[in-house]
Length: 236
Ligand SMILES: Nc1ncnc2c1ncn2[C@@H]1O[C@H](COP(=O)(O)OP(=O)(O)OP(=O)(O)O)[C@@H](O)[C@H]1O
Image (cartoon, rainbow, N blue to C red; front, side):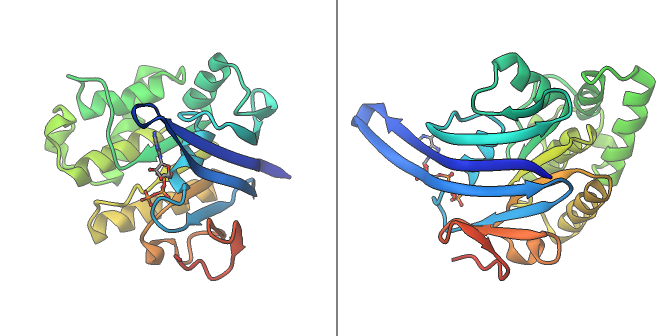
């Protein structure tokens, strides 16, 4: 059964100071089955991030539907859903990770990960245990656990970002270039975690410039240029 279906999707951006409209993406159709991991490839500016941000509803597209089979709401069009439903889905069902860390100031990395668990209604003892597990898994240095992430390196921020999303074990995880500033060892950790999440039933959609990273990990690769799934997965 289809878990996520993108239908006739299109998005334009208005640049008000230039009085111009940019057609960022058009006529995109694809679907993802439950438990699949799909990669999205295409040249820079082809609209890969725009699609992920629209699924997460950071962007509101002007054409099409994004049908998602929610545990709580059943089949729901993410583009039409009420704000409160989107907030619920972000809390319990859909995660989004990019290379940028955007978090509450003066909050330690441990507290941030615990917060992700607490907002799902789990007790503090579970939050503590699960936070420590993911922070260790991503090898975030223990001395950074109780410090604020504003001074972290790019790779450290990213590992924290992934830990905050992964600890929720989301049903759908959107990965927007999450490995962009990571070294090889950290990429291996991300790969391990993706494999683990997948094994536990998480459905994933990701944008990666690193084709080697996608190799053998993605079930299908959607090519923005051809507007279809390809088996080769080459970046055009
Ligand atoms: N908030 C925005 N306001 C205006 N234009 C935008 C906005 N977000 C994206 N765009 C434009 O939409 C197009 C698609 O951008 P998007 O970031 O989705 O591409 P991408 O394929 O992810 O690119 P890259 O691989 O370089 O990250 C680009 O031309 C971009 O400039």
